Length: 155
Ligand SMILES: Cc1cc2nc3c(=O)[nH]c(=O)nc-3n(C[C@H](O)[C@H](O)[C@H](O)COP(=O)(O)OP(=O)(O)OC[C@H]3O[C@@H](n4cnc5c(N)ncnc54)[C@H](O)[C@@H]3O)c2cc1C
Image (cartoon, rainbow, N blue to C red; front, side):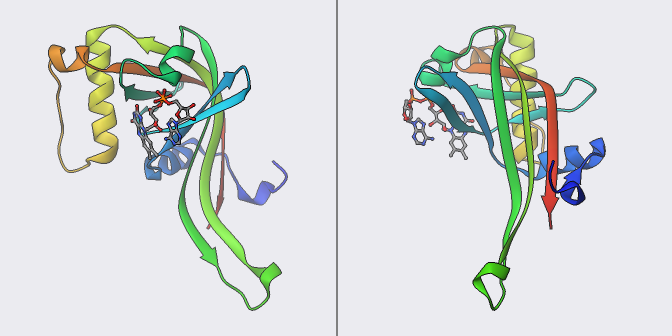
């Protein structure tokens, strides 16, 4: 990273940035370039970090994801404009994470329910949610296993 002073390497702090983000942009390889799709997500931290997404059963991203599909991702938060008198002295504050990994569809019902619970936990800190088998059967769930990620902040 060119701006080492903005690089975040401490894992706990990277996890904190991830927790502060609302949207993960998943980048998939498409024949005509990259397909970047914004998604809500759940996060399972750990030595092997994982993100979970849910979706309708059909659509472009669903058709592009098989077991082991390579993907990139990005998320950011804490946006703010740092104003100045001169145009070139303006700055933009942010916290962000960029990484790569592999995606797979989740078929196992128990893992699907855990994933949906994790997604809800990311957005609703005030209470826990659980899901029935029937509910889990009606949605597609995907797991992104992280190979590597970097974080940067300018706050
Ligand atoms: C903050 C945020 C959170 C979201 N959370 C979820 C989520 O958790 N689960 C989920 O399934 N979807 C979520 N969406 C919607 C998601 O971005 C896609 O629109 C949706 O998943 C359909 O994607 P698809 O690949 O099936 O596209 P399709 O419905 O198959 O559409 C194909 C084409 O439509 C266009 N398109 C699709 N989505 C978008 C878009 N968002 N903006 C502009 N053009 C688009 C693209 O050109 C794409 O090639 C979220 C969107 C936002 C902005």
